[in-house]
Length: 173
Image (cartoon, rainbow, N blue to C red; front, side):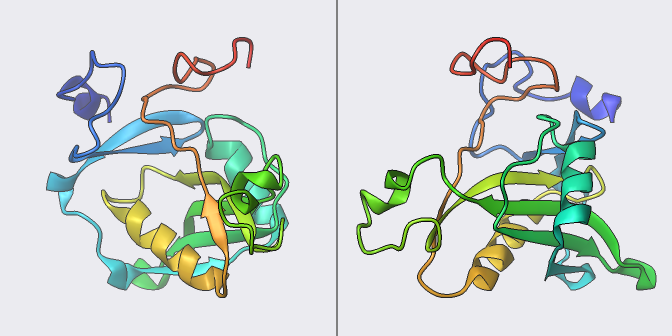
């Protein structure tokens, strides 16, 4: 993947343009990039399933840049089923927001910590082609069912484990 990173058109920018054809991926807490020109995402080879705490935690600790696992209420796995395999290649974790007011203040009818969740971890390995995240996240939202509102704080800044993702990131974390 180093060759791909050498040709990134926005390498010197502090943020990735939202209309970019590049998608960030992770493996062993190191980032890589996938480009749409590699063929894109084929939904026929993937499934999304509920995921138990132990495999979700193991996957996130191994691949997510933070190296930490949050308090989780729901977990989903993205599985590649190509060639008869059932290989985990992505995890989405939905947990409890820091405060109940995160979503209940703007949406007061929600039951705190039940109908208001935070997408606290979302990681796809470099095995996933470009645009997999949109399809995966849509299936997760479908699986949440009912009146549930989820928030997330994606970072628009490319970064590596052990470095600050942006000026807003607390120092020493």
